[in-house]
Image (cartoon, rainbow, N blue to C red; front, top):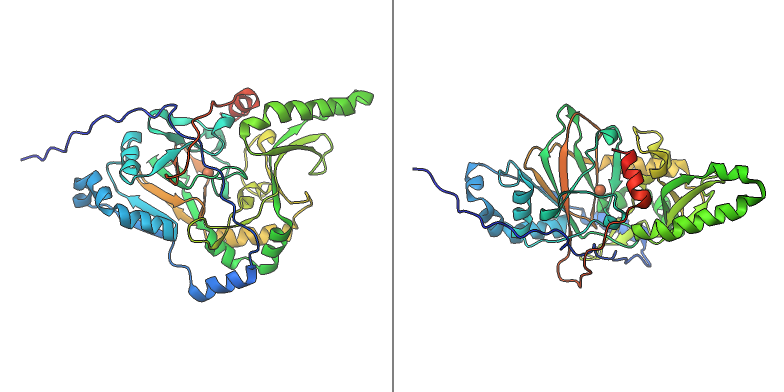
Length: 386
Ligand SMILES: [Fe+2]
C-alpha cells in the first residue's frame, strides 16, 4: 500500500505583493556597557542555534511537523536567535520553502535595499531572493552583518540551500550579536558607542574632475548633487554624498548617517552588537579575498568621519571570528534567524552554488506597499558583477 500525500492547493503568487521592509527599531540610548557585559557574564548566554534534523517519520508528516511545533520553533527563534532544519524534503524547492515559512505564520517583506535594484528574486512569486551566488563574487568573502541599514531592518530571515557549492566552500555562517557584545573589550565598545559609526556604501572615483581647472569645483558640486538626487534615494538609506572621507579628494562616497554599533533587542531589551563593520571595514576587506568593483567598496568611520584605529578593527575581527558558526547546508536545509540578534555571512566557494533567502517583518505592524526597483547606476553595478 502506498500512502498518498495530501494534494496541496497552488499558492497565490506574491509578485508585487510584498510590503516594504520595516523601519529599523533603534533603542540605543544610555547603555551602561560595562554593567551589561557583566550581566551577560553572570547570567550566561544559552546556545543560540537549535538544530532539528528530520528522519523519515518527520519527513512523512510534511508541513504538519511545522504546524505542530510552531510555538516551540518560534519561541526558540525569538529567545535564542536561530533555528536550523536539516534533512527536510519539503524545502527543496522555492515553493516548498515558502510553504514552510507560511506554515510558521512568518510575514514576508522586501529586502531592506530592494528599491536599489541590487537584489534579484530567485522566485518573485514565492518572495524568495537569490543569495550572492554569482561566479564573479565566489571568491569574495562576505563578513558578518545584520540585514539592516540605518533606516530599514528585516525582523527575521529564512535562508535556504537548494544546492551547496559544487566544488568546495560557500558555507553560510552566523554569529550571536549578544556574545560579540559580551566579549569585545569594553574600551573598544565605548569608543565606538560614544562616537558612533558611519558606513560608506559606495565609491565613485571622479578623478577626471581634477583636470577641469577652474571648473573643477562646480563640476564636483554638480556630480554630488546629481548622484545625491538620482541614485542615493533609490537606496532609501539616508545617504550623504561626501568627497574625500578616505583621503582621496575626488572620491565621492555615499555615507550612511551616524548610528550606534550597539542596539537593544526590540523584544528582549538586552543590548547586542548591531554593526556591520566586520563586513564593511575596508581595512578587513583589503586583507581578505574581495572581488567587488571599486564602486561597490565600503568602509566604516567613526561618527565624525575620523579613522577607527586598525588595532580596534583587528580586535572586532578576532572576537567576531571566535563566534562564527559555519553551517554546511545541504539541499533543503533551512536556517531561520532573528535579524536583530544574529549576524550572518558566507565563505568563499568554487563551482556552482544556489542558496536563497526570504525576509520577514514582525507581522503586526502597519505596512507600506511594494516600491519599484530603481535602475540607473544600480543596474550598472549589477552588470559589473555578473
Ligand atoms: Fe546578508
